[in-house]
Amino acid sequence: MRKYSLPIVLLVLFETIAIVLWLTKDNVFYFFNFSYIGLSIALGIFLYIRKYKHARRIVQLLVGTYMLIYLGLICNENMQIEGFWYYLFTGIFEAATVHYAVAKILGPLLFGRGWCGYACWTAMVLDFLPYKTAKTPRKRIGWIRYIVFAASLIFVSALFLARVGNIEKIMFWSFIVGNLLYYAVGIALAYAFKDNRAFCKYICPVTVFLKPMSYYSLLRIQCDKSKCVSCGKCRQVCPMDVDVTDNGRKRKNGTECILCLECVKNCPKSAL
Image (cartoon, rainbow, N blue to C red; front, side, top):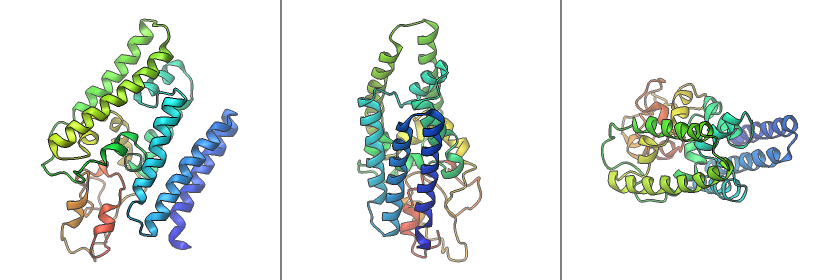
């Protein structure tokens, strides 16, 4: 049972969050929400330990479709960054603000950019495309993410400053339109750059939160130097171009590791 300690710990962590939010917010939805996500992640890690090759994809589909279809489309919650700004401005610690606090602001201190690898509904679709690893060198256009980040903030700020009516309805439709734009741009970039994760590397505004916080992540890929033979296989299969053979926090593209564990699965010497 010792090898299953990680999924058990993560399940307990999410159950703790579920119970605390349920009791403090007096809303049973949080219990079911975080219990479901915790169970999905624990199941995926369990399947990975059992060497099931599609373990991560199962988690992506379970969590990603739940957040996109149920929370977003059925419950009319804008789970994109615009929804975060909206609830933040209204002073309501609900929905998107809770989601961002747990998954994208405080959570990365523990599990880095695990959100990008196991729960993002945009990446869930992009990962079905044919370019699992980049076929071209990384581009120097990561600054675009900051423009998109600022644009989302300005968009929501303008709605409040102009005292626009029916902001909730606008937020719902911006969620739909925003997702369609994300998918369109993500798919176009994937084929243009021959890289499924081009959108994550250059455009996604959420990474403005994720990158600095994941620098301090407790869960990180570590390399056993005594086993490593410098074959380069880990770099060849990494979708985010991370140098996992460097154990330092300043390793190349270190804040972009999505904990997909492709490097671990493909290391011929089990050095990772």
